[in-house]
Image 1: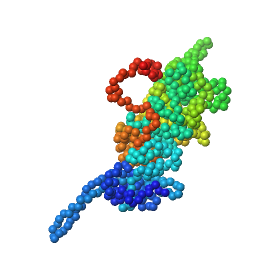
Image 2: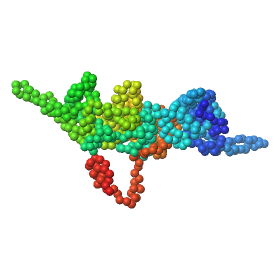
Image 3: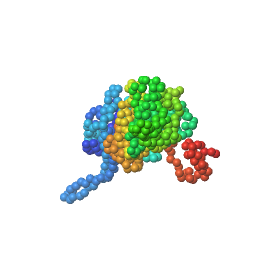
Image 4: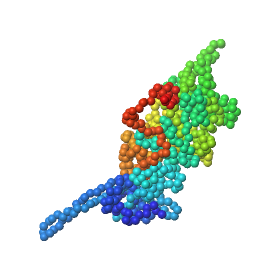
Length: 588
């Protein structure tokens, strides 16, 4: 049964003019004309049975016109002016709904096989009909696929939802200026996702915005900070250490080797050789012969960094027999590894990088990686083991210069696990990249960590779908996010954007020009979004439903706070927290 069950009395008006994809409709009823709004949807009768044409209202006009008639009365010419109204609606056709019979649902096609006939009826799409039509647009065949965002701006009685499968399969971006409701929208998506029995996602929380989110399907983790080093916090405490031996070779080189040094090639080569030897010693000592025959420098095998430093120091100070008997000369690498050794030592003792180099001894155990993977990647919602669901990982204590490298380390860990998991055993996982412009930049700096991060996320964006890894890129500056990653995101949720460069990025992502939808970007209300993509074939304006738990992204009311007649908090407590690198509650 068709979703469009109209009577002729429900018609807005009739078609008076037809162009290639533009239809002019005459509306005789002024009251109905007043209720119409630009960017609303309309449906027109097709000349082909079983089809309805869908259009977007582009322009509404109400004019008084004059028709001049010449009357000849007894040889004299006189003017007879007849006043009337011409109420016209300009509609751009955008697709066709094909009515299916039996158990099959209607299908929306982004093609126009026919155009309306003159005097064909035109109807408004609103209320339940709008909801049903949007279900067709989202191609949702089961309730389980529904990702509910809120309600349509032009009709608050119509529920707005997307196809959850396609939203994550084809990657998505959520963009909006500061204060537009971007974090609010992300929280709404996370809550909908966490309600599923076997949800699986990781949120890269850069500023700790999503700490208030709660629920059975949500777990909070954080990358270890300086305060966790003495406490020896572990995964059981919700604290994640990412030991240095998880780094791939290119990441190690970017962190330890100064490429401007003339000895950089020798340093990289010897570091690689020494790390391989250290990993081989670990596998041999632990009797892991099954791994020993096939491991590479990129294999996640533990090793002791102190042994690597000691060996490089030996090479840096090595003396070898000279040409004359009993004489010595400097070895081939004498003095050429000093800077590398010092960089390694500095990184090892830097408390800011304690999560890498000062992790608990348990992180050197061979089976520790399995525990980390169970916490981060597993999709099983098991409250006894506290794994699965949506994992919100707080990176707020990671130094900004290390942020791209560390986040990409987690992303690559997830991708590698999915890649090496048999197809029948893969459980899909989504990566939410909050503040993506900080670690997936369009313009890379001289930092090797940024290059490694961009390379990692570009690969996930291009190949992740094959391995069940979805990306949700979140940013307030889409113009500063890597274009290759954005080009692979086929779903867009755009909040208010006032910057011209950011608006242009969104315009390029829109499938076509539909009624100047991109012109709405600077005037969208807080919590309102323009949604378009594979999960919803048409650009739609949606008011996002308030999440149950709001993220910590609210704007501070400056004027109200300044106007309060009460004692201001002691800043000495803030200084103490700064020194300790840990936020302390204020003393009373």
